[in-house]
Image 1 (cartoon, rainbow, N blue to C red):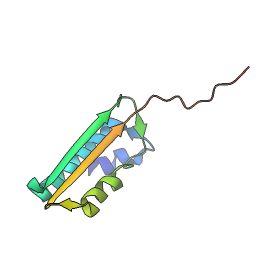
Image 2 (image 1 turned 45 degrees about the horizontal axis):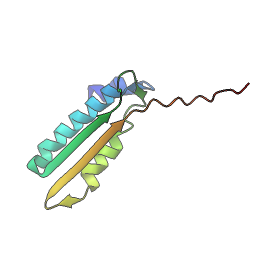
Image 3 (image 1 turned 120 degrees about the vertical axis):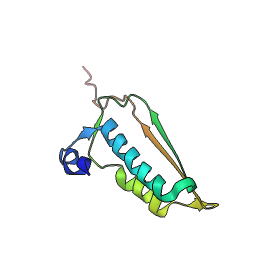
Length: 94
């Protein structure tokens, strides 16, 4: 709740804070689903010093639990965060 009330008011938050918030949400869902939920979170690349709009990913994660396909009474969720170091600035030609 603190994250939504205070940190999410900023236009950008640190990606690691956002991932931490998502992990807390996943932990709550694990209490609800128990042994029936299997979640794997992958983090690829350097997450440090990366910022994103707050709560950007939460809707997608919530939808996994709300609308996810249940196989053999189990819910399988794979979440991957990938940071690439692409330089988006165009180089000027002389």
